[in-house]
Image (tube, rainbow, N blue to C red):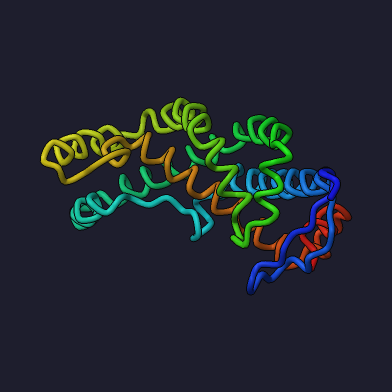
Length: 222
């Protein structure tokens, strides 16, 4: 068989492929189109006022080890400070997300034909998103952290969060990014961003015709 043509073998129980022959170029174009559509939709949805704060799926709350402290603050009439921190964390995520757009676009363009074929053949509902996250999460974290840091500056409780978390980390009660509010928010912002991209990918796989895109319908249509 010509290398420029392949047939995707229908995996058992696969909900979206009918085994039709598709060119490698089409597969690559379809994956790139799916990624770009999902990424830009997620950025538009989250990178605005209340994109995180107003969305229960991605809203960033206090980590578990600080919830008891927050209850104590509320009981002593300092609930406004807790709310201020939660709002600042979500606003920081909303401010950071638009910075992902340029990296997303360049990453989409760089996807190889070989990788595209693997993703098209995958039966995972979020295979494309998972691949994308693997390529962009680390550089995005580097982009997001300074923005999140700036957005949380001046919030009194943020410094107190870091002080309390540092002590808890010293006792082994807190690990990783949760020991630093800015890193915690950066991680949660990225979690929310890739969650939303994954939701868009699921929609494309479930009903590619509805996207109105000929290439998505051809590559992901059953």
